[in-house]
Length: 372
Image (cartoon, rainbow, N blue to C red; front, side, top):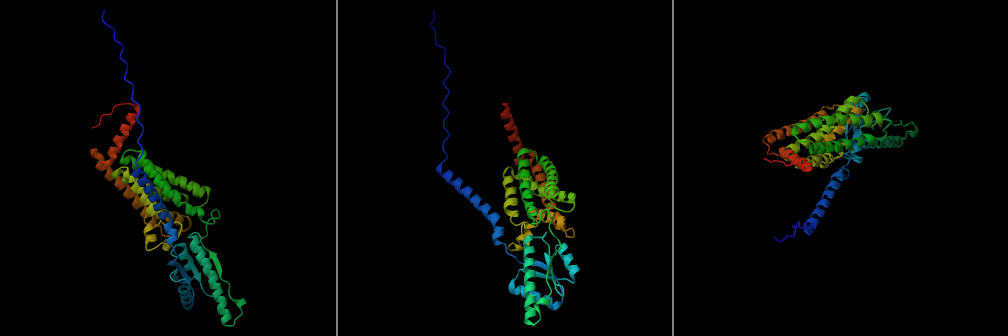
């Protein structure tokens, strides 16, 4: 009788090894890196407010030549470099200059002195011109006293807001806040589409649909609900859609060329470079050097200016804003096309992203995947 053997026992599964701790050097490096990112964010968002100063504010002026010259000398003495006086023929020409955004306001000299403001252009310049009206009134009173005239006969300087803000948004906070959803919404859309949609041309279509729907939703909230926007509803919706696309399309384009690293490139460009120099919350003239003018060629600045002009300044020339946004959309589409052509061979970032998604999908379903 053959000897019996004990049944073989299955080998005991090895206990899982504990996850090793992060090396101290990496911990310190990550902490310092995150702190550096916080510093960059604080610098980017605080730099405009800290460095901005009133300068070269275009203000139309109408009146006798001698009075205009005296007013210019007074401004240079009390506020050097703050105001740039633009002589015009009469009050009607001054109003036209304000409505076309050639000037932030106007001063009409003569027997009935008047200061024309435009609170819809900028609350900051509106305050500056209102203060100028008070100084003008004080100057007229001093002249009367010096000449021995009765101060009671001094004409009163009137202040007229020729382009007022909407009664639903009297301080302009809603209009200024419109920049945030434009920039953040465009970045969120670009990042989300880049992560969830595979294929350069499919991302282009997704950006187009997202921008159109987003522009309509934006105007429904800001104009139909809050009343912060004015003017033609569909024109504002088109401007909002183009602004969203101008932010999102370059991000998806960078992703088509660079892979996931393109998300960081696009987001940093829009949030940390373009946003601080947009001039959305203050006149672009207030920013140092030529950054205000440069910012008008980036989507945040162009989008904010376009929505403000369409809402309150129908006589203003908005060609540059439309052109700037259109160029950014075209650049994003061009980058996507270039990425699509480069990925045709299956060796570029976009193709790698497609293969990675196929692997992840197969792993979730437990199916083997052949790579090649």
